[in-house]
Image (cartoon, rainbow, N blue to C red; front, top):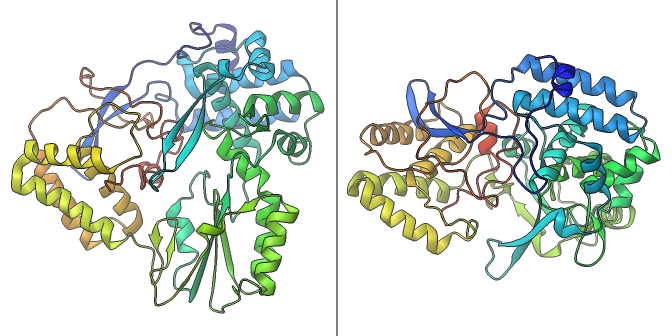
Length: 467
C-alpha cells in the first residue's frame, strides 16, 4: 500500500479515550524445530507489514524529519509513520487531536495514574499510562525517534538487537563487578532537558516542533514538575537520548581505569580486574561527580553493590562469574513446575501453581485473570534458551519434558500472553478463548518491533518470576 494514498484515505476514527483502530488478537501456534511451545495471540495491527515495508517507512521518516519545520510537518510525519507501521489498521491523527494532547492542562484526560507493588514488600512503583489515543501517537513518535537516533554503544536497554544477555556478556570473567542504580530515573528527566536536547544534533529541531514533541512525551506529576512519565512508549527511548552524554563520560572514565562500562536503563555496571571501587577513592569520586553534579541524576545508595570473583556476580539478573547464566534458583523453579505437572497431572499442577502465584507474585495484582502454568513454563524455557543457547544440555532436557507434557495436555480455556506477529506466520482461526492481558501486564511486550521472539523474553524475567 502506498503510504501517501493511505493518509488521504484513512481508516475508521475513534474517540480519544477509546482504543484506536486495532482488531482483536488472533492465535498463532509457536513452533520451534517441530516442537509446539504454546499458542500465542497476535495483534493484527502489526501483522502483514513486511520487513521491506518497515525499511521503506524508516527511510521515508528520515527524509521527512530532515525537512520538518512546522507543527503541520510533524503531523504529516506522524501519519506517514503510523500508516507505515499499522497499515490498513492505522488511524489518522488530526491537528486538533495533536494540539489537544500536546497542550492540555488537564493531565487526567491524558494519563491514568496507578501504582504497582515492587518486589520489596511495602514499596510501590507509580505508573502513568497514557490514554489510548495519546499512546497511539507516542508509539509513532517512538518509531520516529528510533529512526533518527542511534543509541550509545554502552546503552543496552530499550535498544533493538541488544538485551540483558548482551549487557551481561560485557562483564563476564571479571574479578570485580560494581553495580549502581539511578534513583527515580524517569521522573528525574525534565521536559526542559528533552526540549533543549531536541534542538541539538542530531535532531536539530526548531523551537516550535521541539516544544510540541516535548509536551507530547512529558506530563505534569503530582509535585507539579513537568517530567518523563513512567508508562509512556516514548519514555525508554528518550532516556537513552538524554543519557548519551552520561554514557560518553562514564565510558571515558572506565577506560581511564581499565574498566568496562554498560548501562541498562537505570542499572549501571562497571567491571574490571583491579579494585578501584573504594567509596572515597578517585574513581568513585569522579563517577559521583559526573552522575550527580554534571548530569543531575541521583544515585540510589541502597542498591550499590560490589561483587568479588568468589561471590555470585550478577548483572541485570544474570550471573557473570564465568559466563552469562541464569541463577540456580531459576532452574530449580523451572524444574519444580515441570515436575509437579508430570507427577500430579495438569489440573492439579495448575491448581497448586495458581494458588502459589497469587500468594507470592506481587507484579500482576491488577490482573483478575488466571495465570496458566504452561505459559509460565514456555516463557521461562525461551528465556533460558536465549541465555544459554538451544544446544545447552539443561535447556534441551527440560524442553523435551515440556514438549511431552504439551502433547498430552487437555484442552482448556487458556488466557495467554501477547506476542507480536512478524507477518510471516499464519494464525490459527480459533480466537474464542483468547483474552488480552490487562494494560498493567507485560507493558513493553506489545510495543516490541523486533521479530526475534527470544529478545522479547529478555524483558520478562521479573514479570514471569513465580516467587
